[in-house]
Length: 386
Length: 144
Ligand SMILES: [Zn+2]
Image 1 (cartoon, each protein chain N blue to C red):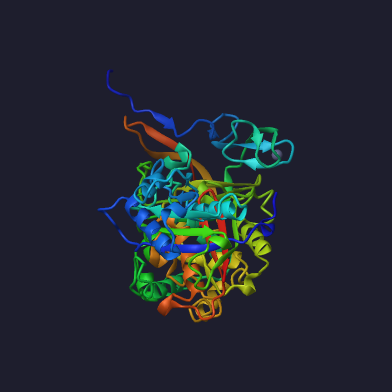
Image 2: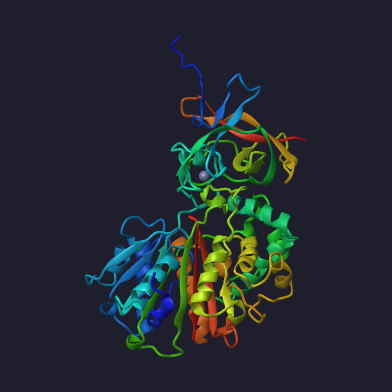
């Protein structure tokens, strides 16, 4: 395998997001193409500058990326559609990154877009008997993980409520978020039970939305205002022995995984980037469910198991804290259009590193990490730096 | 007769046995003769996904285990695949052979579900199918 460190440096040429919410009158191709226009504008580029396109989505059907790009301009460049569950956007980004790093192309665009089906997400990559048994309720799969987490740590429902409160505070500063209204601990704790012990306000909301990031070689870079480059882009999929109820797998009791999926992917990312957790100025963790943000922060190596709830309470993860987490409100405020989420997380890091995050700006942000999990399971880690 | 006789149908063949050799229904898993790993449900191809050898044979699993996690699902699952009652509960049970089983729970009162509590295998109705037949599946019930 070629060492990614030995390949050429890859820069963010431009990034674009749409507003995230419900767009009943639009197809995902409409806001997918809007994200592309926004990214092109930011990059000071035209579609004819693009040499390859990778489009992440989950529910949008065959060749959906082509449909979005068709609304911008077909130019014969390869368009690859990427379905990798909630890691689709991160996976598309990684492919675009590798293409530019390996000098196959000088400019590539990664797109993530999704118009969400309404109601609880119907995960379908299960066997028919598992679907008939009702094992595909992702909120309940997370709820089971939450029960295990509560057994192994001293985390409480109030700690989970605090994650929602923090992220909704951050979301109130993000004009693109679906939810821009703050909530209180009491409101979270009074919300209806969805799958014990998880309540409605522990769950990220659905949303439609899209994002796009254009990557390029140094020579092709046009918008040079605080240039952001890719320090690492890693994807790790399923390890033997580690349980993942989201894909119908339980842990092996005889041969448990020596290292979990998240631990493996973040270790690889830090190795490639040459940084450690202490070097990060902010992170976008994976908060599909409030408790998941806590164990994600721990698995990513920012603190020991069971420590995240206490640090959260002390304000450590606030925008003005020592390690800001989900500065744009995370999945919890932004909403979760599956295929687009990974790109949105990366866009927030870019915005913060450029210093253009306005009222939610983290001071002196130079390096940031984004992490997206996905059914599969997948774990995608991206590290960006100025 | 002419009237449709209501039948009981297994959700899937091969999950459990009601052989008279055993006093009660038992789950059927796979055990690897090479590395010792245990799987439930049994792997039809006989292929061990741990040591990656074709070395599996059937094993009859214990009917009692320990509850590791559970969630009571309060709303109808999406997708239109599930026709059982709501709320319903599912989670994980560890069996003494060394395998963690993902299972539906049945209980008189869901408050009886506790992590660490023993639970026992029951064969129980999941739902009716379109023709009114009863679909049966394996579940675990907490021992109070
Ligand atoms: Zn084996």
